Length: 630
Image (cartoon, helix red, strand yellow):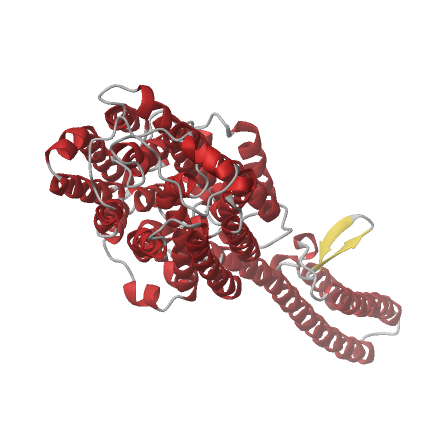
């Protein structure tokens, strides 16, 4: 049930629901948070099988600056500590391949040739059939291909291309499938927290892979680099088993969730999570400002992200002269900073929204603009760091990547904000466009750095900063965080309309009762006036008859007739006073709805109380007439 629908419920019911949720709904050990933890481990594995090749290729290939005799060639521009550091870089004793730079760049980019193809289709499959099966089966395929990589690399470069494309196809559905699941599991004011925690796995996947790969290259089995693929592929296979055992597509399907948590989630999601539809409003999506702003931010962020992801180890080795073990560990430092910032961003964003300090739109825009500006500034600063000050280069690079972590509370979760029902498809659309940088950025970086000089790498960082600036301008002006009209669930809207109409009917019925009370009161007063006129008519008749009797009877009867006439006149005066009182009462109670003041027809003034005894006016008049006749 949405906030709009809840606003039409009685206040005491809302308070009771909120109190029940606060007291009975678990948080960090709930099923929705357990889903976030499992998703976190899943993205660790997904990114491990995705980036392991970027690090492993450094020790797989015989470097062009390491000749066969083992002597080290150093750029003539390197002086001082750089020459000393370069001389300490050992020859590639575990390297097996003579792939040139163009071959290596193409291998790194081939992953994205497959990755771009399954984004939209994977999102549609997840929204239509459930993200659990889509993500589980595709991750299993990626694990198998990773395990086959060492064997295929020794057999043919073509097989390496094929495996990297298949891994790209398989992992391409990961984000759309997870977005589809969160669209059914994440309450609105917990979305930043849950989504950011689950996607922290991407950063820890980078950290674990970069940090361990350098050590495995030197000390691992199967000539060092082969163990990287066997370990990451094996762990990913184990995670798939955990995923199928612990996860469901929606709270309604979960067998271990508490009733309170299920009600809490289902009542706050903006649409019916049990209904799946194959119909997607692509025309409305294409005209959506929110989607285009989100797509632009996604593309610009990924240019910087993929440039660093695929080229960072090469930059560490070629410019900063770190050896392979240092390279792996230091390449992990920026992503550790990104993990911290991503976690803090998700927590703080939901606090700002829940306390109504910032609206959802303002929150998403603010975090994304800060992310872009910070990443762009410190990327450029990294390019100006020399080998002699390589520690500063690592610091600048870490800060730049740390700023990109703020996007976890911005465009990354934005799809679930403005269209939770179609979050999987929407992420597939934006990530399809955002995959193009993954295909192009490594090639551009390779083309801009033919000699791996600091000046050439500086141009790579200039390009990243330009994309960051453009993304900040577009998303800062056009980003949207509220539910789009075309993304509303018509079934839920009809239910909300029914609630509104029902409450309006109740109010109208209450007002109708008030009007009916007044109408009944007026009708009663009218009947009183008619009774009074009838009584006056009878009184006039009795007067005339009395006069005639007086002329016809003897004088002794005059006294008796006068007595009867005085009694009748007294009753008429009483009725007149009662009429005045009724008129005053009518004017005072006009518009009041107290049922206790209602004058019903059976309570019309047809009787009076004399000395505590109720006497009917008709019977009294009839008795008086008999006395007069007698």
